[in-house]
Image (cartoon, helix red, strand yellow):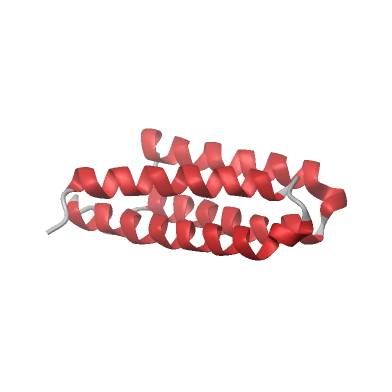
Length: 113
């Protein structure tokens, strides 16, 4: 049985990797695309698995704030792929990624619904 603290450490570590490589993708050379997309894909999968693991361990079901956080995660995962294709819109996508990250953190601490 995996402990809640193990889920939490893996979850936060995966989020840091996902965010770091997402912002790296905006400035990275095109030849790094495959490696960065693999790393962010694995990180996104770990975030999903550990997030649902924590929800299960805490017996919370699937509340509204977790749905919003899940949507933010999907948005971040998609933005990484878009970052390599739409270089001219990098500033806009960086702002969107930042807003998604802040929204996800706010949902965890505020839990409005």
